[in-house]
Image 1 (spheres, rainbow, N blue to C red):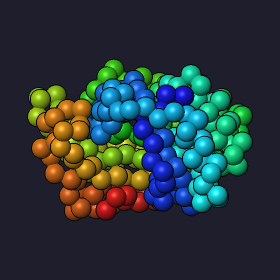
Image 2: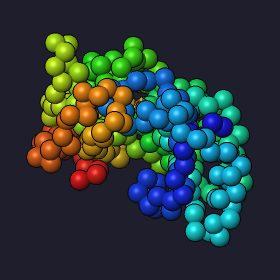
Image 3: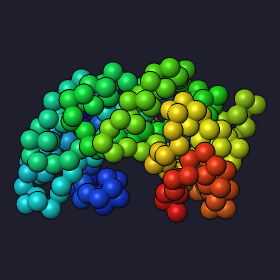
Image 4: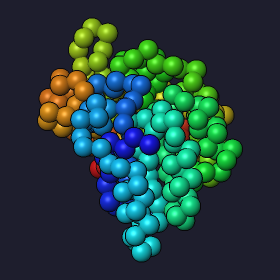
Length: 243
Ligand code: SF4
């Protein structure tokens, strides 16, 4: 698998696990707020898969999970083989996805290979093209949502990002737009009991795909609280992340 970068351990990404984290190269979206430009471009020195697996197996039980992030991991043709190798070490697996490859998720689900799936819901569907920077495959995203909710553990999450508007201005996604996101999730899945996170946007100098987003501040806490209140009507288990 093409690993663009790796972190030795994280306590924050995989609930209940001390996880090693890999970032796969490449993505089919171009979210203007994306932090992962170097991962998308593959401009970092690549990490050899064997080296990463050696690290995991020599951790002496300190690491008990692997979180596979991107980029978009589901674009990797040998993702399933990689996951099998991780599981063979006795480690749990979490995968992050933008939801564009439902058939890959379905395969991982049927094979029982993934313990935790985390899927981005970028906003209400009418903003998806703008927030992803591409003609977003809406039907595939919707299909993936139905698959993701069948994994043993899963979450949906939305980052409260600045959005490029039709008039070329940029403004934060609004509480009303977040409420519409939550309503869409409940209506599409027929359920309200999802684990759902609203994540804070954090700017990064010389790192975002659209440099105009770098000028934005972090999502203000007051705005996040308004979003949480608006979303709770539809998704009572909403939590703020990164605050
Ligand atoms: S933020 Fe968007 S462009 Fe960046 S890795 Fe995620 S889905 Fe891809």
